[in-house]
Length: 298
Image (cartoon, rainbow, N blue to C red):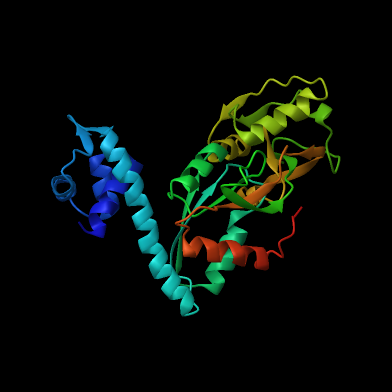
């Protein structure tokens, strides 16, 4: 058994596709399949259910997969720990982000990148539930998500921002004279919103519902870039977080604050408490507290 076989196994879990797993691992599909069969023979277990395509893992495969993730995390942690002892942060930081976070993640990435030129980053747009799952399964190092209902026994959170909301619009299509807008002024506008069930959308729905308002969204999507495209083309306005940097994505975008509009929960940086915990993740988490003064932003 070698570390590459474990990487192949975890890549297959993440992609759920033999070809995509092979591409991610920079090998051919036959090579990946052969190495996984070698692992099965060595362990004396069938790990992968195969048909015409990948059909999932056997029960034994799921159990071995959990150990593989832990071993890979420990392997990466060893190299990160050695680098930290040399005063360096190296490796790849895997960061899960909720859509429409009221904190510009590039602010954090830029701080890390300036201080640690050898550090690389993988960013994943995920729901808050998937971020916690990814942290628990060692598929993510850190999460940028909401702190409500956070299980403090298993996760540690650093509050970053109390997310305020504004109305994003393209000034070629919509114009507002007021420096801020009331919820009542938004109810009849053609709105583009994230899909129901997403945390930011829940906060928007609460803002309207608590005032007895029932807007009829013109467009709903789970993709932020589609919201931005629709706003730029004048199809709708969108409720977005202030301080997210999204208003800089369009030449004619304007983000007007909404009065008394905040998400239901503050945003925070999250790390798992349990071992094995990535040395890289731990170093970045504590460095973030120092770089950002550990105080909530606006």
